[in-house]
Amino acid sequence: MGVDLGGVWPRELAEVFERSLTVEYGSLTRSGKPVTMPVGPYIGRGGLTLDVQTGLCFPAKADRARRNPKVCLLFADPIGEGMSDLPVVLVQGHAAVRDADLQGNTDRAVALTMEKYPAAFRGVPRVVLARMAFYFARIWVEVTPLHIRWWPSRTLDIEPAEWWANADVVLPTSDPPPSGEPPPPWTQPPADWRPVEARSLGRLALSDLSTIDRDGYPICLPIAFGSLMDDKLPVFLGIGAPEVLPGPACLSLHSHKEVYTGEENHTLVGSLINDSLGSWFHIERALGDWSTPGNRLKVAMAYLVKAPKLVPRLKKEAARRAPLVPKVRLNRTI
Figure 1: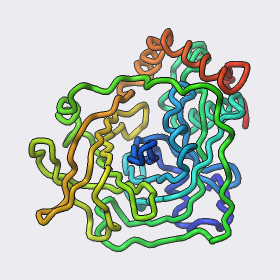
Figure 2 (figure 1 turned 90 degrees about the vertical axis):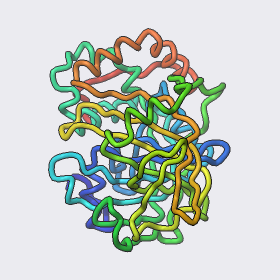
Figure 3 (figure 1 turned 30 degrees about the horizontal axis):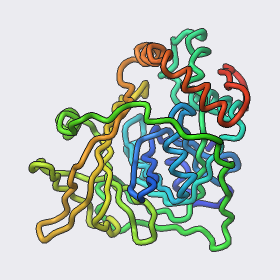
Figure 4 (figure 1 turned 180 degrees about the vertical axis):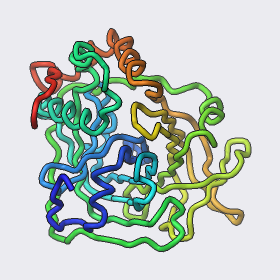
């Protein structure tokens, strides 16, 4: 293994944390509703945290964690060579946001992202990569695991194994919040969620549902689902799944190729209803998304087309935290 976990977490989960291509990252809105989206996972420096990143141009995922550090991570993506035999792992933990050192963040993002997803960048001209600060300038979210559960597969057909952090675990605080107001959403949500549902339900490989548990943490689990009935989707969980409470809910639908070059993802929000007939996800709306399907050059060019709108946004977000916009420094060791 590339990182020594120091015996802090169950040793058998190290490969999951190190090799997973995506993880469902769940955080809570101001009103306490879960929002879950797939991102890239990384083992933190020193092996004490599980880290995810979000673009400096798109800080909402980090802003939510800074306001409420209760988050979850679901490692349940079996797509990729040798991934299908790895267990499904749910981590609930405490988030700390890191955006005080933007250049250091960016250097780390460039190095680790290109190492983790080499096929996504192979053949993309260096001059193109060097101009993609609006993509590589990053905010990191470091998650200290507090409760871990794991199952052999996405079916959740047996009771999970469990691990709890020691009561005296140190919970780090986030960097101070930046000055000024956060930016508006980058992409506008679709007016009607039905076209999103029609494109994604049953076609994208991974379907994960997030709710809130009794301790106020988001909890994300793999689901199966039945046929949509008006605005209600019947959802099915394995018999080994933990209790899932009715209330605000989020359905994440996504997929990618076995050799990762990009992904397609869609997010629906609404509420979970439990009745005598079972559990139902009541769809209220779709969130805006920025999927990146296609070959690596197409993805890179798609970002460059958006650059005229993203560069001013990058400068504004950098100015809220530091005097200079971070640079993309290739082949730099961290």
